[in-house]
Image (cartoon, rainbow, N blue to C red):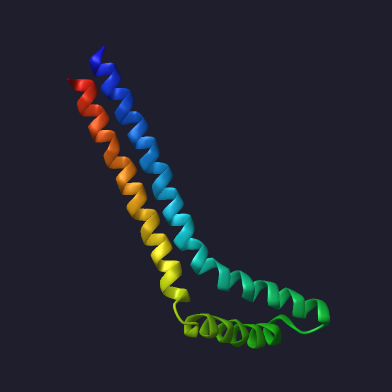
Length: 108
């Protein structure tokens, strides 16, 4: 019965690991996809106004680049966003390692 309990603890540990990895990938992926989404939305908005897609992209890409530069120049904002992601990684690692203690307690 102890082996079944240890296997269940390891299974739950694996599920927590997978969910944690997914959350970290989504968090850092969102930072990459947000500017790209802003470019697409601006191109579509300019298309509604009547600009050609190429001309709209020619205007939208520098506009989003400038907005990204303003975010980059905001004191402490980039560091805060990255630190939040790093904290997410640290908390996930702590939660995954906590299962080792539970598994050791179940084995004994």
